Length: 329
Picture (cartoon, rainbow, N blue to C red):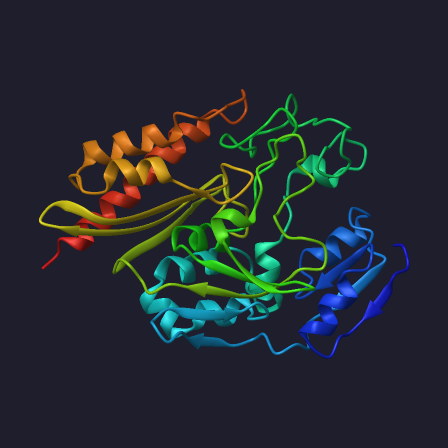
């Protein structure tokens, strides 16, 4: 491990100023960054420890919704009564995201910025454009069972690993970001970038910008759920996950929110499926048609082609269950 400077700022302004230095990295829960430093993938010159900043509360917003501090622990957020009742998919996503020990350490801000678990990204002997730009991508013709099928490029097929982010994308969450000059708000769906020819540039954040909070709008549908399909029931990353919120009235879809995980380099909001479902019948045929339309843009390889059918069937099953709940007396 290379030596680095350590800074513990007194406030958010100090943190941002310290992090504008070349090679600076923020440290929150450390559940991802520490591993990456240990493996030699991240080589910060300065670590800015923000764990002492007052960003660890969950507060009600005046017009409804919640403001979640970036340093709120995943376990705390999952156990929050307001999250469990109004944003059930988020609570379920958090609880499926890691072991209890990791949830007790991991923060909301860090979860948003965690990096891929593609095995080639962690293997220094392999070619990985995300780790070393311009070197190539061994996953393209290698072991890519967990690789992305939506939003990919010839440079990278790595998936984003977060469960929480998938639920946040479906919920239209907004990220509050503090920079050297101003504070700005970025929709979660716009925070992460698709790989294109620069897969190492993973977010729209500028150097030194610090995520300070996530805002949730008021819930739009009473029925929501998160489902994660993985190789084993214990801690594992998603092959496919679905976050869905559905409201049905007189057999018609009046509200629909849908996002996928495990299939793209970022949390994937299913805009096409939502467009097709909104205002239409809440039945099996419509669910199949919408899911197939969303997955029609998939770019598959031999090892991950199964994800198209798996994602389609998981979407349909989720919407079927939610529609049945919505029509109960």
